[in-house]
Amino acid sequence: MKLVLIRHGESEWNRKNLFTGWTDVDLTKNGMEESKLAGLLLKEGEYDFDICYTSYLKRAIHTLNGILEQLDREWLPVFKSWKLNERHYGMLQGLNKAETALKYGEEQVKTWRRSFDVRPPALNVEDERNPRFQEQYRNERNERIPLCESLKDTIDRVVPYFDQVIKKDMEKGERVLIVAHGNSIRALVKHFENLSEKDIIEVNIPTGVPLVYEFDDAFYFVQKEYLGDLELIKLKMQKVANQGKVTETK
Image (cartoon, rainbow, N blue to C red; front, side):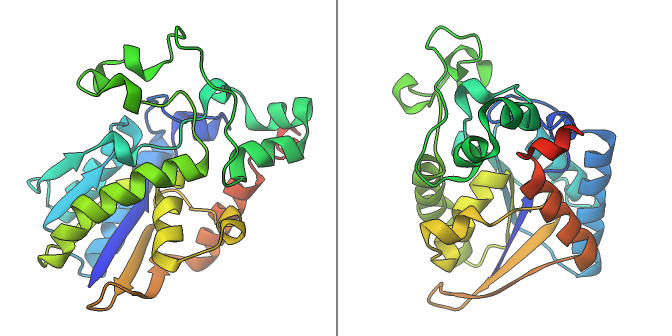
């Protein structure tokens, strides 16, 4: 069985190299084009779907919409959950990654961005950026909504949601498409491939590129592939890796 994962297209804050997290920014024009290209690649590969999953954040939702438009599958059922949201970057949200590296050092920023279990500074409970004050989360229990997260925290919400909800659809034979975020997809990559805490740190997910996983009947990982121009995909991965470097400000 197969599963397709796609990180949202370039967002307004991706372009500005800002920590985004749960900030609900939209796609750039390039991001929308990435979503359309992802849809065309899936269409060319004769992929079809029965059900879709995405986050509460519009950059992922609008990417999914662009993909479904290209596939002529806008009528497909779509389920949204904050469990598929990006990692919550706490007080870092809105800060430029390269400028933050210049101030605190590249190693500190890499620790905040890429360590497994280190959380960034948390939002104050009264901060207007607290998701508890945002309409998307009005029906969620406050104690479940984070003020910051490590990758481990993100895994702890993404993987159970996959196992308890999405995986059951796949086991019933449903063809599933997930459009989410860099870290929520990294959470699934670590889970599927049984990567170590050290190995997952070096995994970079490019924007707007279909990542196809194949599993055997016992749901063990068999293989994966990205669809599209492999050289362009490598460049996108390197761009993600470079986001927290001081040289980005030059």
